[in-house]
Every structure is written in C-alpha cells, then in structure tokens.
Length: 204
Length: 96
Image (cartoon, rainbow over all chains, first blue to last red):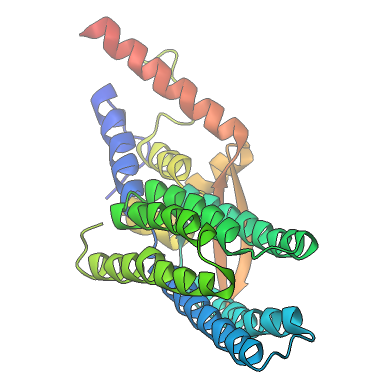
C-alpha cells in the first residue's frame, strides 16, 4: 500500500514511474467490436447494393439507380451507427481509464468517415464508382490502426484494402462491389475476430 | 540530495498519480485507487493537492446515482513531471 510522505530514493521514484508506464501499455481497450460491427455492416451493404444494381440493370431500369444504390448503403450504415451508439453508452459505463491511443483512433476513424462521405459526393459529380477510392482510404486507416494498437493482422488488413483498391480499378462497373465485399472479409472481419480471440486469451 | 526535485511530486502517492495520468488520456478515482493501492481518504487528499497546484484537472460527474471523479493531467502537470524526470536522470547520471 502506498503511504505518502515517506522519503524516496531515486530508484524508488524510477520504480513508480516505470510501473505506471508498463501498466499503460496493457490499457489498450478491446477495439475488436468496431471492426466486427463495421465489417458486417459494410459486407451486408456491399452485397445488398450489388444485388440491387444487378436486379435493376438486368431489367434495364436505369431511372434513379444512383439513389437506389445509395439507399442500400445508407440504411445498413445508419443501423451500424445506432448499434455503435448503444455500445458506446454501455461501454462508457464500464471504462475507468481512457488511453491516448483510444482518443487518436476515434479521431482517425471520424476523419475517415468524413472522407468517405466526401468521396461518395465527389464520385457522384465525376460520375465514377467510389469503391477504389474508398478502399484506398480504408487501407490507410486500417494500416495506421494496426500500427497504433500493435496488431499485425490489422496491418495486413490495411495492405489487403490497398491491393483491393488497385484490383477494383480494373474491374468493370458494379462488379467492383464483389472485390469490396471480399476485401472486407480479409481486411476487417478476419483481423477483427483474431483481435477478439487474442484479447480473450490475454495475448495483446 | 534532492534539492532540485519538485516537493509536490517527490512523494510516493502523488508521483504515482502523476505518472499514471501522464501515460493515459484520463482515469477515474477507482482506477487510480486500484493502481496505487492507496486508501480512498489519502488518495482524495493527494488528488486535491495536485489539483490545487494546477497539475491535474478533476471533473466530478454522476454515473447513475454515484459520483464519478475523472482526473486528467494538465499541460503544467506534464511540464512538471518532465522536469522531475530530468532532475532524476541528472541525479542518477552524476551518481553512477
């Protein structure tokens, strides 16, 4: 137990500081929930969007197609945000400490989300499919997250997204969504489940 | 031998509090208590001393019906902690 006004030797001071620093490295919160939530949401949304586009394109019904595709993204994403909000309120009640990395990750992914929304608008104006650009940014953010939490599968997930961005640029039209869906499985879901498993086993 | 060391930080419990807060974004009273193994009364007194000196910021909120105290290190606190570590390094270098 720590008493207060005892005279300390420099070694004792260092010991106290060292202990605090060592412990702070164990403070990384389990972020697997977010990768799994958004992994499933984006996987579902991309498959839904693909099916919607295929259905209307096969029947040559082109009217309002962009908005139909957009809605097939917006609905799952809105549900994702609601689930995330409920989870945040619940987990805030459990958390007694917030690390610097937790805060940086919030900023990183908030900025990523804003860039995604901007890209969708820019691609609409330029009349191109947004998938390659979104995948490239997602790759960058996932890669940085992997480095920050020192979890290699997430880092490789980031690389997969960037490769998928390059591949999707060569894939015609709405088939890019298939590349998108596959990359979500390897870039988000598999690293997310590995992160969850390693947390349960106390390896990270 | 510790002439240059900040007396406010040169105490086991206060140094432990500042060291913990220097490595995290924020921490609540229970976390600090668990980490330092101090009694609530003593911890409370030392948190207040650091707060009065402007080394830390203390926010009191409610979590349900219970008070929830969140502590965060200030810029002054970080500067003083760095100075303390530098003085300590200096002392150790001279005495090795």
